[in-house]
Image 1: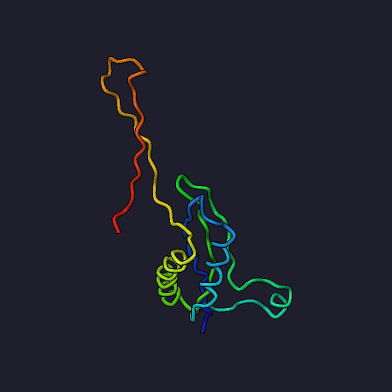
Image 2: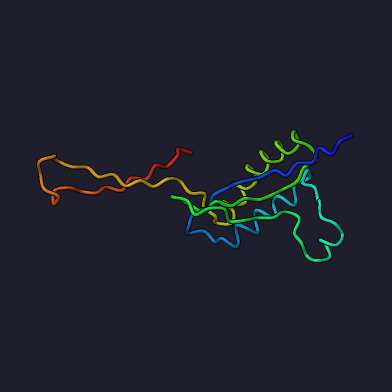
Length: 132
């Protein structure tokens, strides 16, 4: 039988105001504690202090910092279900630890009259926040 193990990437963004190091640790711990998360480390890697779930900062986006966790599962179906579980669990963990999941911020420029000068242009900040 072939090895069906798969590395599942769990990506989540946090706000720039959130504690990045705390978020990285919470993501890793949450994933490591999931019953379907496999430990694929060799005894040497464990001895060297390698982590079971690797977390990395992937991107500084418009609204937040994107983080990726790499967690192993026994097969694609299990990986998908683990991914779904972890997203739900991370929302709860983040809420309890004051880690904000960001939403987009947009700046709109509204001109009163196209013939008016730049002085009459006003800027309005609009936050597009999802309804909960």
